[in-house]
Image (tube, rainbow, N blue to C red; front, side, top):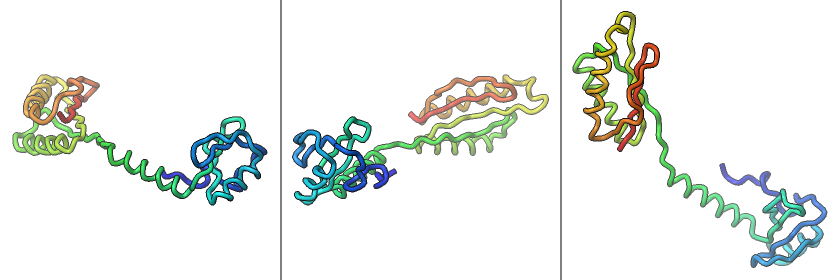
Length: 171
């Protein structure tokens, strides 16, 4: 989120007796009484901004607060632009999947991978299908070879109860 005024104390919101002051040029002025520091900031037409509230005494800087806030928000937006958000998608298969259904789900899986998402492939076994786990493994092996052009296996197929799970990520 952006920098809120309540997060940073400025001018008259600084309630401590004395503060360590840094002027607008970055030079240390030393420890001053808060009213004196505030007067100095007002004399140059700037704000007294608390930059390190946990220090003893707190560190304050004489600066243009609105300009500082604007620059911080700009930095934050720039950081968000560079982020790549990866979603986790899930596609479920059954061991007796038909050819058309397989191709349809394969196409969706490739679309997810091209967008940069991770895909969790789940093979579900119902009832007596548990006796034919090898059929499910064959379908997953075929799927792994079919998507090898756009994705790579992050987690190999693993049996967990009635499911075999496999993770695929984009190349």
